[in-house]
Length: 132
Ligand code: TYD
Image (tube, rainbow, N blue to C red; front, side):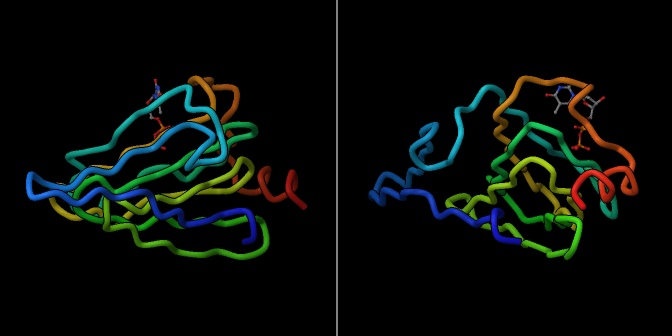
């Protein structure tokens, strides 16, 4: 899965507390047009199970932990996120799900595109056909 990558973000350590930041096109390879976050996920629930035709994402566990499962049409890989200074870059045309949310998990998702229902691929077989 060569285009997917874990990116370590800058960290500033101070006695007053730590600080991490992200700038579009600097720490992540796209301009951020949208942010959404996922929280209060009941135990055992999962999110996602879709791909995007165009949208690219950067996913961070701001608090707690969860797994992101990615499939590029050939292989599946699981990424466990549990630190607020690491994020997962997910390009377009990657099937993605999120599960195993801990209590108090807070997932921040930065997107390269505004929300567009038409950009979603919901059918895994259709996704496979498109990427192969
Ligand atoms: P969805 O992208 O399926 O969430 P997840 O991948 O975490 O399961 O979105 C769930 C619902 O929220 C869907 O009805 C569309 C709506 N939504 C918006 O209106 N704007 C947004 O930016 C996002 C991400 C979702």
